[in-house]
Amino acid sequence: MINFFSNYKDKIIFVLSIFLLFLSFYLNEDGSGGGARGDFEVTYGFILALQENLLADPKDWTLVHTPLHFIILSFVTRLISNTDLLRLFFCIFSLSLPILFFSSILISKIENVLRSNVLILSSIILFIPSFRYTSIWANNLITSLFFFLLSIYFFKKWEENKKNFIDKNSLFQIIFLVLATYTRQYFAVFFIYFLFRYFLIFDFKEFIKIFLLCILSSLPVFYYTYLFPELLTGQHISLKAINYFLLGNLSIMSITIFPIVMINLIYGNIEFKKTILPIIVSFIAILILSLNFEPVSWKGGGVNFMISQKLFNSSLYFYFTSFITLSSFIYIFLEKKENFIILIILTFMFFSMQVYQRYYEPMFFIIFFTLIKTNLINIFVRKFSASLYLLLYFVSYYIVTISDLVYKI
Image (cartoon, rainbow, N blue to C red; front, side, top):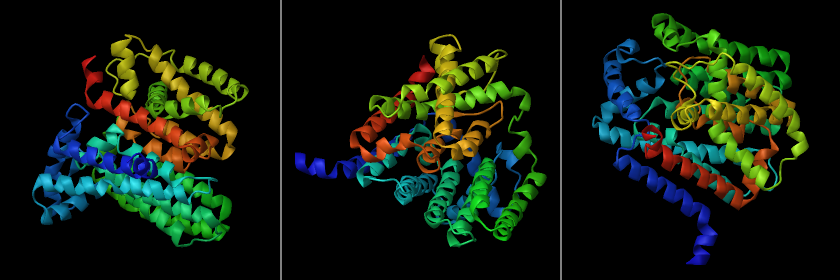
Protein backbone atom coordinates (compact mmCIF):
# COMPACT_ATOMS: atom_id res chain seq x y z
CA MET A 1 0.00 0.00 0.00
CA ILE A 2 2.84 2.38 0.89
CA ASN A 3 4.62 1.56 -2.38
CA PHE A 4 1.40 2.11 -4.31
CA PHE A 5 0.98 5.61 -2.83
CA SER A 6 4.65 6.38 -3.40
CA ASN A 7 4.44 5.39 -7.06
CA TYR A 8 1.12 7.09 -7.80
CA LYS A 9 1.04 9.92 -5.25
CA ASP A 10 0.68 12.65 -7.86
CA LYS A 11 -2.23 10.91 -9.58
CA ILE A 12 -3.91 10.12 -6.25
CA ILE A 13 -3.67 13.77 -5.21
CA PHE A 14 -5.07 14.93 -8.55
CA VAL A 15 -8.00 12.51 -8.44
CA LEU A 16 -8.69 13.39 -4.79
CA SER A 17 -8.68 17.08 -5.75
CA ILE A 18 -11.30 16.40 -8.42
CA PHE A 19 -13.40 14.39 -5.95
CA LEU A 20 -13.32 17.26 -3.45
CA LEU A 21 -14.39 19.70 -6.16
CA PHE A 22 -17.46 17.60 -6.93
CA LEU A 23 -18.17 17.24 -3.23
CA SER A 24 -18.17 21.03 -3.06
CA PHE A 25 -20.53 21.08 -6.02
CA TYR A 26 -22.90 18.76 -4.16
CA LEU A 27 -22.75 21.09 -1.14
CA ASN A 28 -23.37 24.17 -3.33
CA GLU A 29 -20.18 25.75 -2.04
CA ASP A 30 -19.78 29.48 -2.58
CA GLY A 31 -16.84 31.11 -0.86
CA SER A 32 -17.71 34.63 -1.97
CA GLY A 33 -20.50 35.09 0.57
CA GLY A 34 -23.18 34.11 -1.94
CA GLY A 35 -21.78 36.17 -4.82
CA ALA A 36 -21.16 33.38 -7.33
CA ARG A 37 -24.53 31.77 -6.74
CA GLY A 38 -26.19 35.16 -6.99
CA ASP A 39 -24.40 35.88 -10.27
CA PHE A 40 -25.60 32.59 -11.73
CA GLU A 41 -29.19 33.11 -10.65
CA VAL A 42 -29.27 36.64 -12.06
CA THR A 43 -27.46 35.92 -15.32
CA TYR A 44 -29.51 32.80 -16.06
CA GLY A 45 -32.24 35.18 -17.15
CA PHE A 46 -29.79 36.69 -19.64
CA ILE A 47 -28.96 33.20 -20.96
CA LEU A 48 -32.67 32.59 -21.62
CA ALA A 49 -33.08 36.03 -23.20
CA LEU A 50 -30.23 35.25 -25.62
CA GLN A 51 -32.20 32.30 -26.93
CA GLU A 52 -34.64 34.82 -28.36
CA ASN A 53 -32.26 37.68 -29.16
CA LEU A 54 -28.45 37.48 -29.34
CA LEU A 55 -28.33 41.26 -28.84
CA ALA A 56 -30.33 41.28 -25.61
CA ASP A 57 -29.20 44.16 -23.38
CA PRO A 58 -26.82 42.77 -20.69
CA LYS A 59 -27.45 45.82 -18.51
CA ASP A 60 -30.86 44.42 -17.59
CA TRP A 61 -28.99 41.65 -15.77
CA THR A 62 -26.27 43.93 -14.31
CA LEU A 63 -23.68 42.40 -16.65
CA VAL A 64 -20.54 44.31 -17.62
CA HIS A 65 -18.69 41.61 -19.59
CA THR A 66 -18.67 40.60 -23.23
CA PRO A 67 -21.29 37.89 -23.85
CA LEU A 68 -19.66 34.83 -25.48
CA HIS A 69 -19.94 32.65 -22.35
CA PHE A 70 -23.66 33.38 -22.06
CA ILE A 71 -24.25 32.91 -25.78
CA ILE A 72 -22.64 29.46 -25.57
CA LEU A 73 -24.77 28.55 -22.55
CA SER A 74 -27.90 29.79 -24.33
CA PHE A 75 -27.36 26.99 -26.86
CA VAL A 76 -26.41 24.43 -24.21
CA THR A 77 -29.58 25.17 -22.23
CA ARG A 78 -31.65 24.13 -25.21
CA LEU A 79 -30.32 20.63 -24.52
CA ILE A 80 -29.89 20.87 -20.74
CA SER A 81 -32.75 22.88 -19.29
CA ASN A 82 -32.26 21.74 -15.68
CA THR A 83 -30.01 24.31 -13.97
CA ASP A 84 -28.35 21.77 -11.66
CA LEU A 85 -27.43 19.53 -14.61
CA LEU A 86 -26.21 22.58 -16.49
CA ARG A 87 -23.95 23.50 -13.58
CA LEU A 88 -22.69 19.91 -13.31
CA PHE A 89 -21.88 19.88 -17.03
CA PHE A 90 -20.00 23.15 -16.60
CA CYS A 91 -18.15 21.88 -13.53
CA ILE A 92 -16.93 18.89 -15.54
CA PHE A 93 -15.92 21.25 -18.35
CA SER A 94 -13.89 23.33 -15.86
CA LEU A 95 -11.51 20.38 -15.37
CA SER A 96 -10.06 21.30 -18.77
CA LEU A 97 -8.18 24.16 -17.06
CA PRO A 98 -5.77 22.06 -14.96
CA ILE A 99 -5.36 19.67 -17.90
CA LEU A 100 -4.45 22.48 -20.29
CA PHE A 101 -2.20 23.99 -17.65
CA PHE A 102 -0.42 20.63 -17.30
CA SER A 103 0.07 20.40 -21.07
CA SER A 104 1.29 24.00 -21.38
CA ILE A 105 4.01 23.55 -18.77
CA LEU A 106 5.25 20.31 -20.34
CA ILE A 107 5.65 22.10 -23.68
CA SER A 108 8.00 24.61 -22.04
CA LYS A 109 11.70 23.96 -22.43
CA ILE A 110 12.52 23.57 -18.74
CA GLU A 111 15.25 21.06 -17.93
CA ASN A 112 14.64 18.10 -15.62
CA VAL A 113 10.87 18.62 -15.44
CA LEU A 114 9.05 15.86 -13.54
CA ARG A 115 5.54 15.13 -14.80
CA SER A 116 4.49 14.21 -11.26
CA ASN A 117 5.43 17.69 -10.03
CA VAL A 118 3.54 19.36 -12.86
CA LEU A 119 0.48 17.30 -11.99
CA ILE A 120 0.72 18.55 -8.40
CA LEU A 121 0.90 22.13 -9.68
CA SER A 122 -2.16 21.42 -11.81
CA SER A 123 -3.97 20.10 -8.74
CA ILE A 124 -3.38 23.46 -7.03
CA ILE A 125 -5.75 25.15 -9.48
CA LEU A 126 -8.53 22.94 -8.13
CA PHE A 127 -8.04 24.44 -4.66
CA ILE A 128 -7.92 28.11 -5.63
CA PRO A 129 -11.20 29.44 -4.18
CA SER A 130 -12.10 31.62 -7.17
CA PHE A 131 -11.72 28.62 -9.49
CA ARG A 132 -13.86 26.43 -7.25
CA TYR A 133 -16.91 28.62 -6.82
CA THR A 134 -16.88 29.95 -10.39
CA SER A 135 -16.71 26.40 -11.77
CA ILE A 136 -19.47 25.25 -9.40
CA TRP A 137 -21.73 28.17 -10.41
CA ALA A 138 -21.03 28.21 -14.18
CA ASN A 139 -19.29 31.60 -14.19
CA ASN A 140 -17.83 33.23 -17.29
CA LEU A 141 -14.43 33.46 -15.55
CA ILE A 142 -13.89 29.76 -16.26
CA THR A 143 -14.84 30.05 -19.93
CA SER A 144 -12.55 33.05 -20.45
CA LEU A 145 -9.65 31.23 -18.75
CA PHE A 146 -10.31 28.15 -20.90
CA PHE A 147 -9.85 30.19 -24.09
CA PHE A 148 -6.91 32.07 -22.56
CA LEU A 149 -5.15 28.83 -21.60
CA LEU A 150 -5.69 27.43 -25.09
CA SER A 151 -4.12 30.63 -26.39
CA ILE A 152 -1.11 30.11 -24.10
CA TYR A 153 -0.88 26.44 -25.12
CA PHE A 154 -0.58 27.27 -28.83
CA PHE A 155 1.80 30.13 -28.07
CA LYS A 156 4.07 27.72 -26.20
CA LYS A 157 3.95 25.39 -29.21
CA TRP A 158 4.93 28.30 -31.46
CA GLU A 159 7.75 29.17 -29.04
CA GLU A 160 9.30 25.75 -29.60
CA ASN A 161 10.41 26.74 -33.11
CA LYS A 162 9.71 30.51 -33.25
CA LYS A 163 8.96 30.56 -36.97
CA ASN A 164 9.21 33.98 -38.58
CA PHE A 165 5.84 33.64 -40.31
CA ILE A 166 2.25 32.96 -39.30
CA ASP A 167 1.86 29.22 -38.74
CA LYS A 168 -1.10 27.27 -37.40
CA ASN A 169 0.07 27.65 -33.79
CA SER A 170 0.37 31.46 -33.90
CA LEU A 171 -2.96 31.64 -35.73
CA PHE A 172 -4.73 29.47 -33.16
CA GLN A 173 -3.09 31.50 -30.39
CA ILE A 174 -4.67 34.70 -31.71
CA ILE A 175 -8.05 33.06 -32.35
CA PHE A 176 -8.36 31.72 -28.81
CA LEU A 177 -7.19 35.00 -27.28
CA VAL A 178 -9.91 36.70 -29.32
CA LEU A 179 -12.46 34.26 -27.89
CA ALA A 180 -11.18 34.98 -24.36
CA THR A 181 -11.71 38.68 -25.05
CA TYR A 182 -15.23 37.98 -26.34
CA THR A 183 -15.87 36.34 -22.96
CA ARG A 184 -14.20 38.92 -20.67
CA GLN A 185 -13.00 42.04 -22.41
CA TYR A 186 -10.00 42.67 -20.16
CA PHE A 187 -8.08 39.78 -21.75
CA ALA A 188 -7.53 42.15 -24.70
CA VAL A 189 -4.54 43.65 -22.85
CA PHE A 190 -2.58 40.45 -23.50
CA PHE A 191 -2.55 41.20 -27.22
CA ILE A 192 0.20 43.69 -26.32
CA TYR A 193 2.40 40.92 -24.93
CA PHE A 194 1.86 38.38 -27.69
CA LEU A 195 2.16 40.91 -30.51
CA PHE A 196 5.41 42.17 -29.02
CA ARG A 197 6.80 38.62 -28.96
CA TYR A 198 5.75 38.13 -32.59
CA PHE A 199 7.26 41.50 -33.56
CA LEU A 200 10.66 40.31 -32.32
CA ILE A 201 10.59 37.18 -34.51
CA PHE A 202 8.26 37.71 -37.49
CA ASP A 203 9.16 39.22 -40.82
CA PHE A 204 7.66 42.70 -41.05
CA LYS A 205 4.99 41.70 -43.59
CA GLU A 206 3.96 38.72 -41.47
CA PHE A 207 3.72 40.92 -38.38
CA ILE A 208 1.48 43.40 -40.23
CA LYS A 209 -0.78 40.52 -41.25
CA ILE A 210 -1.20 39.23 -37.70
CA PHE A 211 -1.61 42.79 -36.39
CA LEU A 212 -4.41 43.45 -38.89
CA LEU A 213 -6.00 40.15 -37.89
CA CYS A 214 -6.07 41.35 -34.28
CA ILE A 215 -7.63 44.68 -35.32
CA LEU A 216 -10.32 43.00 -37.43
CA SER A 217 -11.14 40.48 -34.72
CA SER A 218 -11.67 43.31 -32.23
CA LEU A 219 -14.39 45.00 -34.31
CA PRO A 220 -17.24 42.86 -32.88
CA VAL A 221 -16.19 43.89 -29.36
CA PHE A 222 -16.12 47.57 -30.34
CA TYR A 223 -19.55 47.23 -31.93
CA TYR A 224 -20.97 45.43 -28.89
CA THR A 225 -19.50 48.12 -26.61
CA TYR A 226 -21.05 50.79 -28.84
CA LEU A 227 -24.43 49.11 -28.44
CA PHE A 228 -24.00 48.60 -24.69
CA PRO A 229 -21.57 51.23 -23.30
CA GLU A 230 -22.14 49.84 -19.80
CA LEU A 231 -19.28 47.45 -20.59
CA LEU A 232 -16.99 50.45 -20.11
CA THR A 233 -18.92 52.76 -17.82
CA GLY A 234 -19.77 49.92 -15.45
CA GLN A 235 -16.12 49.13 -14.74
CA HIS A 236 -15.55 52.10 -12.35
CA ILE A 237 -12.45 53.04 -14.31
CA SER A 238 -10.51 55.98 -12.91
CA LEU A 239 -6.91 56.96 -13.64
CA LYS A 240 -7.14 59.35 -10.67
CA ALA A 241 -7.19 56.30 -8.41
CA ILE A 242 -3.77 55.07 -9.53
CA ASN A 243 -2.47 54.48 -5.99
CA TYR A 244 -5.62 52.51 -5.13
CA PHE A 245 -5.55 50.08 -8.02
CA LEU A 246 -1.77 49.68 -7.97
CA LEU A 247 -1.69 48.85 -4.27
CA GLY A 248 -4.79 46.70 -4.63
CA ASN A 249 -3.64 44.75 -7.69
CA LEU A 250 -0.24 44.06 -6.17
CA SER A 251 -1.77 42.99 -2.86
CA ILE A 252 -4.16 40.56 -4.55
CA MET A 253 -1.32 38.90 -6.48
CA SER A 254 0.73 38.50 -3.28
CA ILE A 255 -1.57 35.62 -2.28
CA THR A 256 0.05 33.63 -5.09
CA ILE A 257 3.58 34.98 -5.25
CA PHE A 258 4.31 35.02 -1.49
CA PRO A 259 4.50 31.20 -1.05
CA ILE A 260 6.47 30.87 -4.29
CA VAL A 261 9.11 33.29 -3.00
CA MET A 262 9.15 31.78 0.50
CA ILE A 263 9.65 28.23 -0.77
CA ASN A 264 12.50 29.42 -3.00
CA LEU A 265 14.06 31.11 0.04
CA ILE A 266 13.74 27.91 2.07
CA TYR A 267 15.56 25.95 -0.64
CA GLY A 268 18.22 28.65 -0.97
CA ASN A 269 17.36 29.55 -4.55
CA ILE A 270 17.39 33.31 -3.97
CA GLU A 271 20.62 35.20 -3.31
CA PHE A 272 20.14 37.94 -0.72
CA LYS A 273 22.37 40.44 -2.56
CA LYS A 274 20.05 40.21 -5.58
CA THR A 275 17.09 41.27 -3.43
CA ILE A 276 18.60 44.50 -2.06
CA LEU A 277 17.70 46.75 -5.02
CA PRO A 278 14.16 45.33 -5.40
CA ILE A 279 13.54 45.81 -1.66
CA ILE A 280 14.76 49.43 -1.65
CA VAL A 281 12.86 50.44 -4.81
CA SER A 282 9.68 48.69 -3.67
CA PHE A 283 9.78 50.25 -0.20
CA ILE A 284 10.06 53.77 -1.69
CA ALA A 285 7.32 53.09 -4.28
CA ILE A 286 4.84 51.67 -1.75
CA LEU A 287 5.58 54.54 0.63
CA ILE A 288 4.75 57.07 -2.09
CA LEU A 289 1.59 55.22 -3.16
CA SER A 290 0.35 55.08 0.45
CA LEU A 291 0.58 58.85 1.05
CA ASN A 292 -2.96 59.69 -0.18
CA PHE A 293 -4.52 56.30 0.41
CA GLU A 294 -7.91 56.78 2.11
CA PRO A 295 -9.99 53.73 1.17
CA VAL A 296 -13.46 54.90 2.17
CA SER A 297 -16.05 52.67 0.42
CA TRP A 298 -13.27 51.24 -1.73
CA LYS A 299 -13.97 47.87 -3.40
CA GLY A 300 -10.49 46.56 -4.04
CA GLY A 301 -7.48 44.95 -2.42
CA GLY A 302 -9.03 41.52 -2.12
CA VAL A 303 -8.57 39.24 0.86
CA ASN A 304 -5.45 40.96 2.17
CA PHE A 305 -7.09 44.37 2.42
CA MET A 306 -10.02 42.81 4.28
CA ILE A 307 -7.65 41.07 6.72
CA SER A 308 -5.62 44.24 7.18
CA GLN A 309 -8.65 46.34 8.05
CA LYS A 310 -10.66 43.86 10.12
CA LEU A 311 -7.90 41.98 11.90
CA PHE A 312 -5.28 44.72 12.34
CA ASN A 313 -7.50 47.80 11.98
CA SER A 314 -4.72 49.30 9.86
CA SER A 315 -3.44 49.35 6.28
CA LEU A 316 0.12 48.34 7.20
CA TYR A 317 -0.36 44.63 6.50
CA PHE A 318 -2.02 45.55 3.20
CA TYR A 319 0.96 47.73 2.26
CA PHE A 320 3.31 44.87 3.18
CA THR A 321 1.54 42.45 0.83
CA SER A 322 1.76 45.01 -2.00
CA PHE A 323 5.47 45.40 -1.21
CA ILE A 324 5.98 41.61 -1.46
CA THR A 325 4.59 41.50 -4.99
CA LEU A 326 6.34 44.63 -6.25
CA SER A 327 9.74 43.57 -4.92
CA SER A 328 9.23 40.10 -6.43
CA PHE A 329 8.31 41.64 -9.81
CA ILE A 330 11.43 43.84 -9.78
CA TYR A 331 13.54 40.80 -8.88
CA ILE A 332 11.99 38.82 -11.77
CA PHE A 333 12.55 41.74 -14.16
CA LEU A 334 16.22 42.02 -13.17
CA GLU A 335 16.50 38.27 -13.59
CA LYS A 336 15.22 38.40 -17.19
CA LYS A 337 14.41 41.72 -18.89
CA GLU A 338 11.97 40.04 -21.30
CA ASN A 339 9.48 39.78 -18.42
CA PHE A 340 8.97 43.56 -18.41
CA ILE A 341 5.85 43.75 -20.58
CA ILE A 342 3.95 40.88 -18.94
CA LEU A 343 4.73 42.25 -15.46
CA ILE A 344 3.57 45.74 -16.44
CA ILE A 345 0.36 44.29 -17.91
CA LEU A 346 -0.35 42.32 -14.73
CA THR A 347 0.24 45.37 -12.55
CA PHE A 348 -1.85 47.85 -14.55
CA MET A 349 -4.48 45.69 -16.26
CA PHE A 350 -7.24 46.61 -13.79
CA PHE A 351 -7.22 50.39 -13.33
CA SER A 352 -10.55 50.46 -11.56
CA MET A 353 -11.90 51.35 -8.14
CA GLN A 354 -13.56 47.93 -8.06
CA VAL A 355 -11.10 45.02 -8.41
CA TYR A 356 -11.96 41.68 -6.80
CA GLN A 357 -9.75 38.74 -5.82
CA ARG A 358 -11.27 36.52 -8.49
CA TYR A 359 -10.05 38.83 -11.27
CA TYR A 360 -6.51 37.54 -10.66
CA GLU A 361 -7.35 33.98 -9.56
CA PRO A 362 -6.35 31.58 -10.95
CA MET A 363 -5.20 33.72 -13.92
CA PHE A 364 -2.03 34.98 -12.21
CA PHE A 365 -1.05 31.47 -11.06
CA ILE A 366 -1.43 30.23 -14.65
CA ILE A 367 0.54 33.12 -16.14
CA PHE A 368 3.34 32.81 -13.58
CA PHE A 369 4.07 29.20 -14.50
CA THR A 370 3.55 29.52 -18.26
CA LEU A 371 4.45 33.00 -19.55
CA ILE A 372 6.83 34.52 -16.99
CA LYS A 373 10.47 33.52 -17.50
CA THR A 374 12.02 33.01 -14.08
CA ASN A 375 14.16 30.50 -12.24
CA LEU A 376 11.68 30.72 -9.34
CA ILE A 377 9.62 28.14 -11.23
CA ASN A 378 12.34 25.50 -11.47
CA ILE A 379 12.19 24.25 -7.88
CA PHE A 380 8.51 23.33 -8.28
CA VAL A 381 8.92 21.29 -11.46
CA ARG A 382 12.05 19.52 -10.22
CA LYS A 383 11.45 18.84 -6.52
CA PHE A 384 8.31 17.04 -5.41
CA SER A 385 8.55 18.39 -1.86
CA ALA A 386 8.49 22.00 -3.14
CA SER A 387 5.39 21.46 -5.25
CA LEU A 388 3.76 19.64 -2.32
CA TYR A 389 4.49 22.57 0.03
CA LEU A 390 2.88 24.92 -2.47
CA LEU A 391 -0.16 22.65 -2.68
CA LEU A 392 -0.48 22.59 1.12
CA TYR A 393 -0.33 26.38 1.20
CA PHE A 394 -3.20 26.70 -1.29
CA VAL A 395 -5.23 24.02 0.50
CA SER A 396 -4.82 26.06 3.71
CA TYR A 397 -5.78 29.25 1.87
CA TYR A 398 -8.84 27.50 0.49
CA ILE A 399 -9.91 26.22 3.92
CA VAL A 400 -9.66 29.71 5.44
CA THR A 401 -11.54 31.50 2.68
CA ILE A 402 -14.16 28.86 1.99
CA SER A 403 -15.04 28.49 5.67
CA ASP A 404 -15.90 32.18 5.56
CA LEU A 405 -13.55 32.89 8.46
CA VAL A 406 -12.35 36.06 6.77
CA TYR A 407 -15.87 37.45 6.71
CA LYS A 408 -16.46 36.60 10.37
CA ILE A 409 -13.32 38.26 11.77
